Image (cartoon, rainbow, N blue to C red; front, side):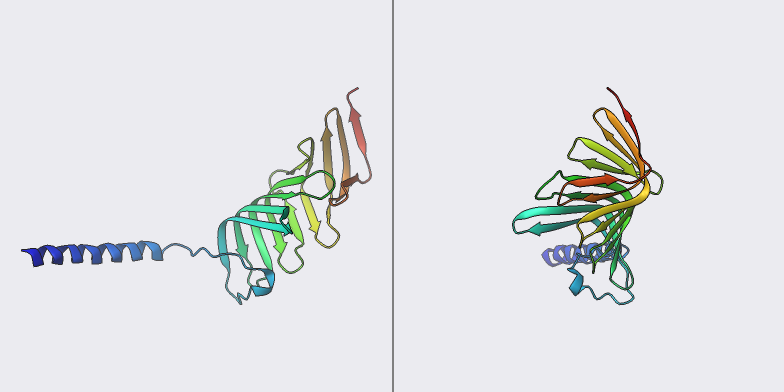
Length: 186
């Protein structure tokens, strides 16, 4: 009787393990992100969910990128991102946060292109000023964000519109390029 009971339990465990393996076999594999120099995917494409990339200078966080999904391209150089939130925290100046629908991060140069497909990117400067534009490029070497698209900048009592802007994050300088139209509420 005791041998029969252990046999039934063992059979149940084997069946349960088989069902578990079958259900896990249908899922896409989650992988961790590696530093740019260590990615060697060949022709394989990998998709990762709930991505968070953080850049540090010593113990200080200078950049935080979060995305709902990231997919490593076939050559391992580009990371295609969806539903992105990125924050820059400069040593001087105001923090800059951008939210958008999609983007491409070049893992070699760390250049980033963000775009809003159905709605503009939402840009918040120091929790006080807001900007909107349809695309934005981050140049890691120059520490600049740029856009050649229409830009709408909103402050407490002003709205400024123009085409294109350059933001030098490390210096806290933001310039809306021509033509500029401003509405002031005095």
